[in-house]
Image (cartoon, rainbow over the protein chains, first blue to last red):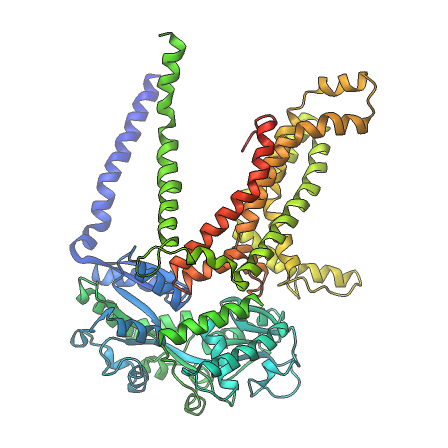
Length: 355
Length: 279
């Protein structure tokens, strides 16, 4: 009995000591520097890079994820967590810039900013005039990933999704913007249209297509084609590359009617109290070695030209890794953020989904 | 003051964690939801968000949810009741094992189990693999209401089994023997003794299956392929992608009212019976 009591005391003492010592030792460095809270898409950063960043700078990174730009915006605007850095897509960046949610990037503190090609700063100036707020992160096109063993004839047009030939074998994106963009492009309209009639026409087309659609998915779209459950899916170019890695029969095409070229960027929120820490993180992401590791984790197209230069020849010539100028030329950046247009699209999307 | 009273007044303290829990995780969130539901984005009072449930899109989702919840409850009763009757006749050890097997899957995260169902039911999935091996034509269950139904029945079946199990195991063998001594056949014993005494369990099982299957959205999202919408999916969309918390809360309140109305019958029925184990 006595012995037991002694060991209990001893254990308690050890636990208490540990409670005192471990945080002091573990966070000693971090406490001296600080921390930042970032929100990013899921699986959109090599988690090892977070540890490396903390090791190099002593800045602790609280990492949060969101599936869609809308979800990120909901999380950000609810104010429950104070984010310092957000990563999101073109149109969401524009919306938040217009709302005044961001502060200017301290470019002078960014040594590696020139690793990002000028072409991409030009892209992002479509929604960030003067390149004040956004650091390009990854980019790509929207196209069709298809199983070459399951299609009859070449796939080069959005038409394959709408002509009924592949009924039940099609996966569309479970994302309002992406699905509408496909229909708008097929009809020959701009992805940034604000014409209600064009949007309604696109919805009619999607309604007619719905019985042929196997499922509306986001992350699993690629996997379903890889697994052979579907003949084709609308996906982002980066997804297509990984799909091809898993299943050599798969191919990716940006349809001839044109498509959407998207670019995801980082920005510093106006709530950020230490923009110097945030800038350090962004600069870190632009660094060549970090860019390379991240690229090899995500396999989306990187705007980091240093990384592209050091890629294998085969990767550099892969349309889904480095989209060619010819295919990008047909594509538009999505910058439509008008509230009325979004509300109408939301309504039309709900009708489509509930049909 | 006698000792017993004193002791019971001391015992009130034991309710403190319960009270704190209920206030923080039930009462306060409800207040927040009602606040959002009854105001518009400018902060003015409105009933529009709750009334929006009558729009054709929402009614359609509501009706579909009702069908799924009703079907799920019926299937669960049909599966659970005979299972429990069979378990009653097992020896004590085997009864324990069979109960354990029913509870075992609940140790695993339910989203993982639903994702497993997605794999099983997909076009090239395990189900179709087995069917074609046996020489039949593959079935297209994935992304249909059938797939959602399989998912909810699978997920909520234990919640039907457990209350029925408790109710039926509580029935004393003496009662059954007495009925038999008085000349009742096994049908009469079942319909006059066992079934009436199991009703409280059946009712709490119904509540525990009907309400969550009516309000679920993850199962329909994963197994319905984003093509089929329960009212839960619409509420989720309003919160997550539409960023319209007022509308989402309004619909949630409408759903709560609806569930309360449909449960009203069940609970009223139950008051006349013996107090049930879980509800």
